[in-house]
Each structure stands twice: as structure tokens, then as C-alpha cells.
Image (cartoon, rainbow, N blue to C red; front, top):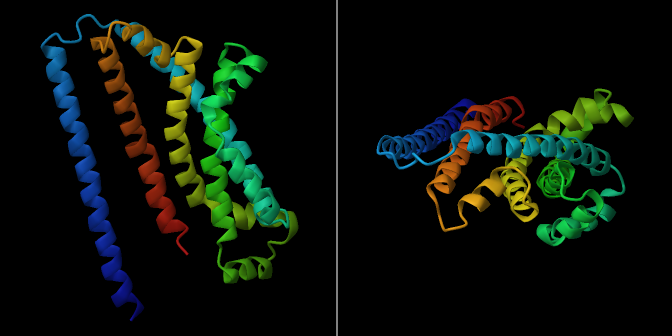
Amino acid sequence: MIRSVARPQSLAWHRSHTKRYKRSWALMGGILFVALMLVAAGYFSGVEWFSLTEAIFHTTYRLAIAYAIALFFGVLIALLVGWSPLADLLFPVFDIAQNLPSFALIPLFIYFFGFSDQMIIFFAVSSIIWPILFSVLTAIRSAHANLNDAATIFGARGWRRVPFYLTPLSYPAILTGSIVGIAIGWETVIGAEIIANIAGFGAFIKDAGVTGVSHAAIAGMLAILVIVFIVNRLVWAPLLSGSSKRYAE
């Protein structure tokens, strides 16, 4: 009986996932085709590709460092708080903190770090950390009681509970929180680069768009779009698919 119910549901999910997968690749293929036609027509002939590549590199490495810091502290705080008596007390505090307007705080980061890489990175951390933190906290707090009991029975008590029960339990939530956090991180890093006028993709499109939407700005936006798509399809999608099979309750 269980197989007769689960099998159709699994097949339906697989078909839906396959359709979405094919549509996303078809859409990206269409965008790349148009981009190649524009390149062939000489539309991007005036673009300084080396400067664009360098700008995207600066933005990407800042985002990567900010994500790594946010991931470490977001998961650590969630694991320590999520199963402790302080969870009910700190949850509203975190909720208030995450709702503070991000760019309203940028003068504070400029005051402490100046117009530097460190300012952009830590400013991005302040935005990326919240989706990860809340995703993991929610996963821990909404875990079924029988899972908690089973973990206790099999010896996951005290600090052993964190690596042997809470971390595997939170893995799918870490992935979903990371996807949202990275999406916010792109916006935060690029916005900070525009405001601080520091070398990066933000400063590149700011300079390129002084006289309006230029060919260089369009080329840059297409390049970022391709990078985001590749990361989502080749990194996040396989990890999510694997976690849904391995850690499904």
C-alpha cells in the first residue's frame, strides 16, 4: 500500500522537476543565443572585456567570502540557539534585526571599515546571514517529536546532539537558506560597490551607465545572469536534489 501511494507521488514530482529543469535550460539557451547574435553583429565591440572580467571577479570573491562568514556564524548560532531554552526569547530579537533596512546601516559600516573590501564584505554578511539563520532555526524548531526522541535514544545528548542530530537535520534548510542568502548577497555587494565606488561590478556598471544604459552595462548584466544560472544549475540544484532524497523524513 505504501509503495502504491508513494510511487505516483515520486513520479509526479520527478516529471514536474524535469519540466522546470528543461524550461530553465531552454530560457538560458535563448538568452545565450541572443547574446551571441549581438556579439556577432558587433553590438558589444566597444566593451572592455578585461575590465568587465576583473570587475566580476572582485564582486564574486567578495560575495564568496561574505557567504562563507555568514554561513559559519548563521549555522553556528542557529544550532546553539535552536535547541536551547533561549530560542523563544531570541527568535523575536533576530526577527527585528533582520527587518532593519540593510542600506540604512551602510554608513555604520563605512564609519568602522571605511571605503574598503572589508566594509563591503561585512555589510554583505549582515544581509546574507538572516535567511540561513532563520531557515536552520525553523528546521530545528519544527522537527518532529519522534525524531528528537529517537536521537536521544541513540545517544545524541548534550553537545553530541549538534553534530550527530541537528546538523544533518538542518542540511536541507542550510541549502535553501544559502540560495536565498546568495541572491540577496549579489544585490548587497553590487549596491555597496555602487555607493562606495570601489572596483567591482557595481562600480563598472555605474561608470558604464553614466550616459544611460550602455552596451557595457548590458554585457555585464548578461554575464552576471549566466554566472547565477550556472551556479544554480550545477551547484544548488544537485545539492537540493540529493538532500531531498537523503534527508527526507
